[in-house]
Length: 277
Image 1 (spheres, rainbow, N blue to C red):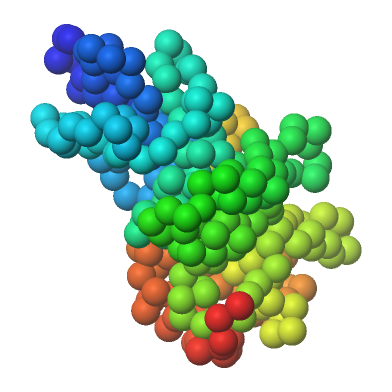
Image 2 (image 1 turned 30 degrees about the vertical axis):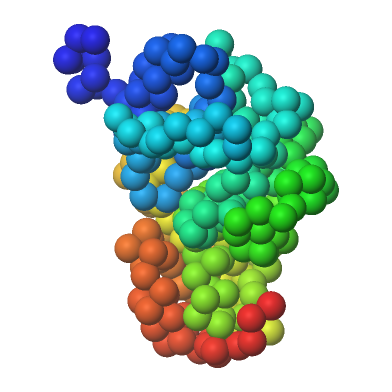
């Protein structure tokens, strides 16, 4: 392809180009799975997309992983395969169970939260219900990583809106922070303030995790400039501080570092080392 097209593509788009190249050059129709299926389903990843393409070839097919292709010799029911843009891909539920079985909890939690997310203010339903994930998990059990998979599926939340919220919540469990409420509506004399990411009502504390999307994504800015978003966030934060006893804000560098998040929230007065829920 033209170099300028590749250069203009973002990491997920480049990975999708690799995926399509592999899918179109197989002698036998392949089923894309794991990270490759996640990319096709447009699920979020924490960190970088891989470069290797993942395929399920079935236990009887054999074959080695080479030339940038990872082959998974696992059982796959035909009912768990869908076609997207002409490519055969594991279904959304099967993809989530496969990812949660791997030792990549941050991406897994972000993906589970994404498919379970349901905004009560919107008529758009969640991509999947937890029951669908559990049924898929049960149909596959036993499999390598099945206990890890079940834990992450049950940990998923319907109210988490962004990957940084999902990662922050998982790290809170790691450091033993009390489990927060998500997206609680706050009001003052002027009316509705907003729905901060986290609230600990017992401690009168509010937490906000900010990714770059809030400031850089035109769809999120709603016609505002980045400077206007910053000013609006400052006004919102001041109002939230006025109706709570404490307020913490952090970005990706802290969300990805459990030690840094622990220090931030401990300094705010939240107890650490609570038993895992």
